[in-house]
Length: 224
Length: 224
DNA sequence: TGCCAACCGGACGAGATCGTCCAATTGAGC
DNA sequence: GCTCAATTGGACGATCTCGTCCGGTTGGCA
Image (cartoon, rainbow over all chains, first blue to last red; front, side):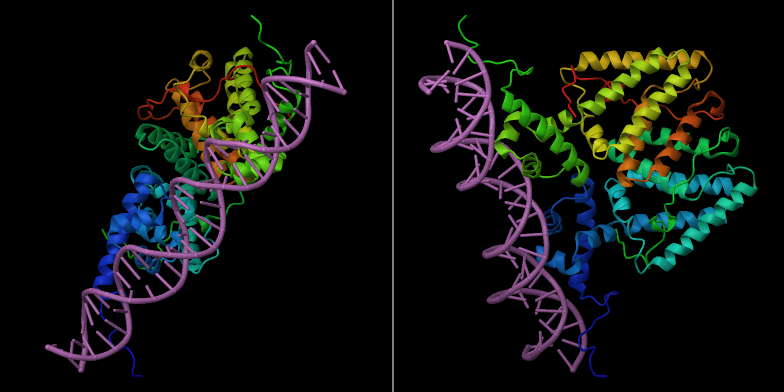
C-alpha cells in the first residue's frame, strides 16, 4: 500500500503532456482517416499529430484501437440516438429519426463508414453486455412501432443491419454524394412502412444485431 | 508489305502458348480474387497460374486491366440482362429481372462486387459509345415501366446506380449472407413499385448512369 | 529546487509488394 | 530439322509499412 507514487490526475491517469498528445493523435487520426481512408499509414497520423510513431503505438497498440477511439464520439451519437428513439412517444418517428441520424453520420463524417464496418465483427468482446442492452432496446422500439401499425409486420430487427450496411457501402462508393444517400434512405424508410407491405419478403438474415456498433463502449473518451 | 512474318492465328494474334497462359491467368485471377479479395498480390495470381510475374504484367499491365478481364464474363451477363429486360413485353418484369440478375451476380460471384465498383469510375474511356447505348436502353425501359403504371413516376434512372452500389456494399460487408442480400433486393424492388410512392422523394443524385459498368466492353474475351 | 519515473521521438531491421530486365526457351513457318 | 522472333520466368532494386528499441527529455511532487 505504498505505490501510486507520481500517478497524477489526468482523468485517465495520464501525465498532462501524455494526455495532450493523446488528444492530438485522435484529432489527427480523424483528419487523416477522412482524407486518405482508414488504411492510411500510422506514420502519417503520427506526423500530422506532431508526435513520434512510438507515442502513437504506445497509446494505441493496434490500428483498430486507434480507429475505434477516433470515432468513439460518432458511435456515441448513434447510441444516444437509440435512447432518444425509445423515448419518443411516436415509435415510428423514433425509428425514422434513429435511422436518419445514423445514416447522416455515415454520410457526413468521412472515414466513419469504414470505422463503422470495422467495428462490426466485434460481437464477442467485453462490451457484449452493453450491446445486448442496445439490441433489446431496438427490439422494443420495433415492437412498439409494429403495434402502432406504422412499421410493417414482417420487418425483422436484422433488417436494420442490412439497411445500415447497404447505406454504408453506398456512401463509401460515392463519398460526397448527399443526394444519393438521401434517396436511398427515403426509399428504405418508405419500404419499411406498414402500407408498403404488399408482397411477402424472403426470410430475414440470421445476422445478429448485437454485432452492430450501436452501443456506447463505456464512457466516451472522445474529445474534439 | 512484307511483315506479318510469324504472326499466327491465336484469335488474339497470340501464339498458342501465350493464349494458353492468358486463360490460365484469368482463371487463377478469378480464384485468387474470390479468395483473398481484389487487392491480392499479383505474384499470388502468377504463382497460382503457374507463370512468372513478367508474363502476367506483359498481358495485363495494370491490376485494373486484370480485374476487368477476369470479370468480363460477369459484366457481359449484366449487359445481356439489360437487352433481355428491354425485350420483355412486361417492362416491370424486365426491370425486376434486370435488377435481380445483377444483384445475384454480385452476391454469388465473390470478388465481383469489388470489380464492379472498381470498373465504376471509367466513364471517360473509349467504351463511352457502348455505355451511352446502355444508358439509353435503360432509360427506355424506365419510361415504358412508368407508362405501364408499374414503376413509380418519381423513379430516376440514377436510382439504379444507387441501388446497385448499396447492394454491392452489403454483399461486400457480409459475403455469403444470401438472406441479407435477398431481403434488401426485395425491399428496394417494392419501394420502386408505383404503389409504394406515398411520399415525395428527395432530389435524385446527379450521378451519371454512363459510369455504371453495365455495357459489354467489346467482344467478350472471357473464358471458363 | 531537485529527483525520478514516465514519457518522448526518431532510427532501425524485418517483411512485403511492385514492376523491370535479361538470358534461356519454345512455337511455327520454311 | 532449322531459324528467328515471340515468349517465358525468376532474380532484382526500389519503395513502403510495420512495430520495437533506446538514449534523451520533461512533468509533477517533495
